[in-house]
Length: 550
Ligand code: NAP
Image (cartoon, rainbow, N blue to C red; front, side, top):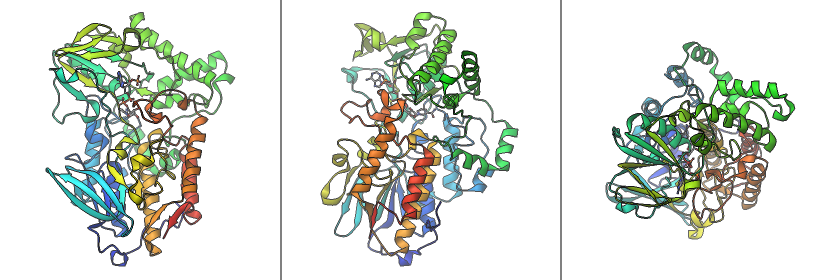
């Protein structure tokens, strides 16, 4: 972090924010909102976070579906801003499950006394910038009433995957069974014992849900549109020796992780899959399959840049599917034909084995026809009715932009964010969008966010925003927004980086293809953590180049 990131100033008395309710309105109390509040206090600013849920935790509050688990190692998917915190906290498993991650978020809220500045069950429905006064007015819905809260800054900590996508299916309103969305799972456990359950969607959420529901349901029918590649995680209890080794020099792990494009420290080779002999390639794929998790992509350095290398790795995983799934017809349906890792790689140790159960069946929507409509008692595909007592939508999110656009945000001259982003999101470094002064986004479009260990990205973003606010206030200035030229150049850089990756070659939520009508642009920055951090730090070193401060 460059020296100009001064967090010690100013004192609240020095600020010119007397006419507002709080200096900063923070939207969301997930991992980003919690840490943002903590840093704002350090700046001496008053802040209030508004959270729709009745608890903190954001993504990990809402996504409490059975089997929900993080596929970044817990020792890395955790805050690093407090050494005491990272030393004191002990994870029970290598990859923590949702309840433990939520407990961790709650612990952080308590440990840093953050709750007194968080208002739960309060949804920010709109936010309006008044250019004459330089004040944001947020409309907050709470307990059936809407109130207005004014602030100098608006910081959106709304998450990348928090606007659920529930496709509209004909006749759904007639369906008499129960229904759920993985992204809005009820707080009370759902009992599927003996029921005929259907699940629509086989992305990361569906893939984690399916084996758990299969254990309980009388019969589970999986409605799959696109098969995904699933690699095992080999999860288990966290090895105390491994934990002790990391804690002896946690900084080493954290620093190493920042040198990786993903911000995740896992074994990673740089050589090409094409340069290895057949035996060496097979040995390497087996080794990385055995290592487990997203790290499989590190078996060779060019799996996401060279289509031929990717095909070799994809063939290896396809071979595993054929080995694991006993019915060749089911195995064929489960076998993806697209680029490995183009849609996000999924992680689960027993997903494919689940399809060897007699009480699980697979409906391939690509060959048997799309879901035609719901009836009172089930749904129809290719003229066949599948009777269901309950249906689970694991249909994902309006990713990265949906969580911002569901708030009616208007900036200079009343322009709405939705209007500005009609042809695709436009930000400078993911932090700000021109025409929306004093509004910051954490892990916004144009930042690595979802392509990285998002907790690392959250912290990097928040440290940067904190440094920026500190500098602004130290200079006695009160307004910041990007130069339009800098923003356009960054959007170009985001597109350039995407063009160099095979990840931009398929339909996915990374490029908006999962939402009908959404502009098809690659939304996150795929240039990696090191290059992104360099760009953020360079802006600071050059006096916040690309930003207008006054
Ligand atoms: P997703 O990856 O977008 O998957 C949605 C699924 O629903 C896809 O299989 C999609 O099929 C299907 N679908 C959507 N609309 C449909 C329709 N009209 N008819 C039939 N099928 C339809 O969403 P997700 O599984 O919730 O995952 C989103 C992201 O959240 C992940 O990629 C990951 O980044 C994150 N996540 C992470 C973890 C973890 O850490 N382990 C766990 C869960 C989620 P198509 O592919 O054909 O569109």
